[in-house]
Amino acid sequence: MMRAFVYLIVFFSFFDLFVQLPIMSPLAQSLGAAPFLIGLAVGMYSFSNTIGNMLSGFWTDKRGPFYVLITGLLATGATLFFYGAAQSTWLLLLVRFAHGLAAGLITPAAFTYLANHTASEKRGQGAAVSGAFVGIAAITGPAFSGILASRTSEVHVLTIVGAAMTILGMAALLMLRKQPASSPLPKQDSVSFSGLLGNARARKAFTGAFLLMFSQGVLAYMLPLKIESLGYDSQTSGLLLSTFGVAAIIIFLSPANRLFDRLQQEKIFFIGAAMMGTSLLLISQLTAAVFLYATMSIYGIGFAFLFPSINSLLMNSVTPESRGTAYGFFYAFFSLGVVAGSAVTGALSLSPLQGFMGTGLLLIVAGLLVLGQSTKKPSSL
Image (cartoon, rainbow, N blue to C red):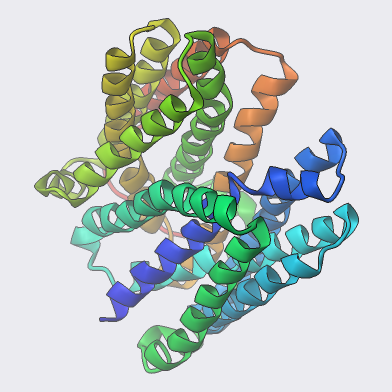
């Protein structure tokens, strides 16, 4: 029951993120923001979310995930209500910073909860289930906000999500309080970022997290441009992204997820990175819609392999007392990857062909390097 509830928290934490994608630019524009400030308003959430992730990690190790999780849920709910009071671009930027900071507290604490209640021999399957909830949020979030905002307003959408997060926070007060993970963890010397980077498996997990979301940033930026250049409408881009999400969810929840605990994690990393990289190389060359849908399915399957592998690598690289800090940095790399993916391709003025080919090759090379550095036994900090 507890695990199911924490999976629900994971879903809503990512639903909150994906709901913003179609509506934040129009909201900023409605306040009279210049193009630069619109981009800043969109990116401000990821910036402060990275800070929140790291703070969550440190506090989770010191106090346990319960207090951090409750604080994150209730604070996120509160900040979502303040969007209605943002009557200028600068106030919107302030609310965006507070929203990202509060939301950043949730994910590392939630995943620490799950890791502490998952048997070591089933960590891959556990990560697959959590990945499925992330995938469902990625599919439903943008659709929900896009449809509802067109009928009401962007602020109305954010207010509804704020109410959901607040209710979830109050429910968590009752449902998680009696769990062992809610009590403070033993005092210890906190693991440092340099110490984590010195751990081979943690380093691979961070690399995978960054590249996973870097490719997502490139895909979100370049795919609509590619589709437009082929003469298709914007709806096709949305359907292609949904195809990748559906394919990933099918793998996450199918019996295939047993492979995530049977194969060496570095091998799963390579399979996932190679499939994602190959699909991006193919997307750069293909023009027919039917082949693009098939290729996005391959990308989704690769995503479904890479996500559990990097979660398992991270869990196997640290002790339970250091998991909060490790997950804090892990999801900070997630946030940085999204920003870097779109920012780098935009700053270098890359074409879709160049963006997809460069990212595809980067993923394949990273997969080969990780496979070549396979370790037989996990080391823990």
